[in-house]
Length: 329
Image 1 (tube, rainbow, N blue to C red):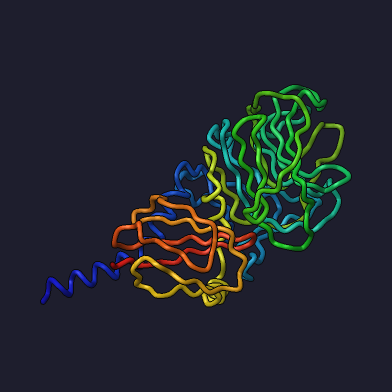
Image 2 (cartoon, helix red, strand yellow):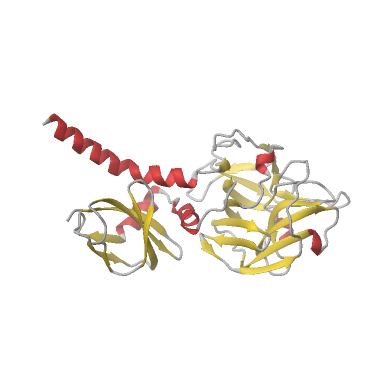
């Protein structure tokens, strides 16, 4: 009797913790830095790359939590990053952050520069295209000028939305393979410039500021940033999608109520009810390995799967959620 009770307890415990285990193991692999801005400017990745605040202000995040994001005034506030080689990643790499723009002036849309040095076009920087306000990720070859051969830029096909929290992720595999995601949806875009390598200076990087030369004032970012992360690898589309799952408890509950899966447990045939426009379903086993990807439909046949616990990641244009099912034939 005791063995039966213990087995049931372990089964329930596994159900409760498995989604967090596989998602965290996957997404945290090769994570270099993570600034949560939760009452401080410290790195929560475990690497202790703590930042130094230079006038920015802790503010409300996208969920309304106080002192959980950072505000830049567009005038003189920014954040210094430590001068560490790990914060100057070689290709491939991924950078992700939540952002709320407060100005439509491109001069106030310089989000970060990972290798800050006056009069030198070096490192990686994120800003917007003059005239369109389209998002732009740039890599530079270290030349001491700002002509097109000194950089390679990828400009998204969509422009900045003011006063709205957005998740922005950039994946740079090489100078000819760069992607920008807005709310975890790939934007598409165009390349400009001809630099074919990435060179960093020996100086620090910054958040919220960029300066091209000593004879002009810096451009300062105006708006809010939260959850700034760098990975020393290219995240895959499924991992990018998971970055937009960070909903508040109420949002998560409401979203979950709009998706019904039955029967569960199931013999393999599932029926789905939802008003959300999902596009595909990614199926993971209980150790987090992806085993199947399907186009979304209201009836799903998983008879080919063995008995056990599985996790269905539903992905839509603006939403993503993972639900647990049990197959018992």
